[in-house]
Image: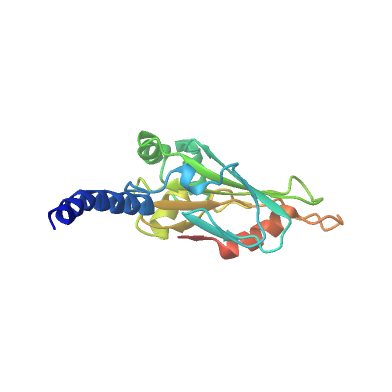
Length: 202
């Protein structure tokens, strides 16, 4: 009876430690948004034929002949650019205001996670389409607030605010106009139509 008690007392801490390790592994062991490594496959590129989920962002390429590559880059906006975008929508905020916006993101060393979709068959133009995410360091609460700082009303506007939650901001890009005289598909437009329809934050 004494031996059984000793064995039980010896095994119990090991069982608690093993359980704790499993729980930490299951939740990533850390708080906050997942790292890039948690969102990107090992080689950074996938050939998608169905719904794909990278931990934070989900999308569906259906049966399109396309691949996606993920990378990171700096914030990517400056105050003059944001002021020009706002002006295209009739807003009168100047670059001084938008510098405070830029400072919020650059101060937090915010990085864009860029999804570059590439059409794999012959296509008009480059056949690439981009979606990118930014951490919501400015704590925008809804799409209206995000558009106040990032909306553009110009034709073929790039970097269009598309999705938002407490942690992430998602932007989509435009595609070149389709050349109706060409027999080739507009790969960018075909990808955009399918991806935008299925895009969501998890």
